[in-house]
Length: 417
Image 1 (cartoon, rainbow, N blue to C red):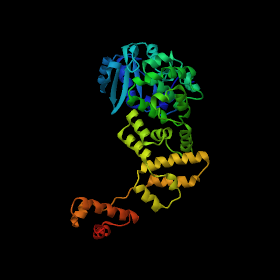
Image 2 (cartoon, rainbow, N blue to C red):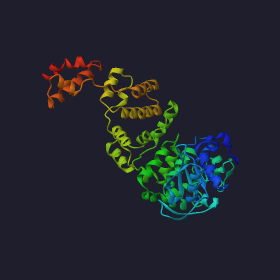
Image 3 (cartoon, helix red, strand yellow):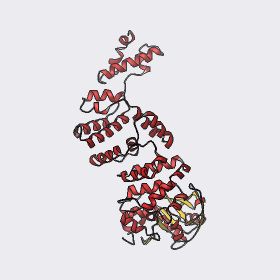
Image 4 (cartoon, rainbow, N blue to C red):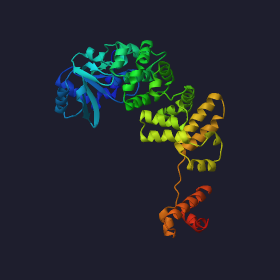
């Protein structure tokens, strides 16, 4: 495994906001800045780098003075934990002082600052996340994370149960990182520790749990991680409504075959029964966003059977979709096709055509408003509501083709009904 990253091959190292921040810290004290964590790990794996974290022996006050001297803007986002977000070129770069834990309770830690890079690495979660790179790309690997990256291992630093008790979210992170970067079986010691400590996850906020679970479910193929979670009793603590992994396996195969992007919420739907009461429990348990909750609810209550739409004409499909939640129909169709594909049923071309049509469908706008009816002499109130409903039914029955004038001409007819 390499002992150096080439800055010229990684723009985030050689130029831009992160480089400006590192240069500001180095100007204050030489050898005082190293990239660390996900940016280094992903660069070594050839994966995209989204966020750049910098570690430094400088205290937060020294960081603030150093970056201000360089014309950068510090924001004290987590000073109590040693973190200052430095804004350079409108991009935030997190700079964290080297730390050691003094006390932890499974959710948050009391820390003390240190200037010892090895001590800082020992408080991190996994060995592959404890690799540092200096501004020239030289790697510092005190926990042997490079070997884990090469082997596709996710291994806790030091005693696994101790690491977990420092922050029980590390249980989900163990499975998430394996889903993204692991090869073969999960680390047996780490897996056993996660099972032994799973009950501690009740101390976590549900927002943190869902955020982490969503990242796990966004992995290209989370099946092995999800199976191990269930076996270890972790699923019972995070998503006890999950009943089986067969459908998510079929969905992952379908995603690969059709080039669909991983969709965490669709994968949740693949894991749980399609029951309104179950969806409601999941919404409450994970405190989904309004949009996520609405989507899950619509999927659980949708009366549209997508199998009955396969091969139907465009007029029938349009009328069905107009009266339905389109995203719910799309979700149900994708899951139904995944099941059929696994069982060798229903021609793929028919499913593919249906899903493409549903995804591309745009809801037509009913051309008549209450103001239009009022101008035509219809009084406001129940009569107007009934007239609007009747006109809309005529419009849908006619394939959405009638214009405003044609519909208004039918007002006397609908009023006599």
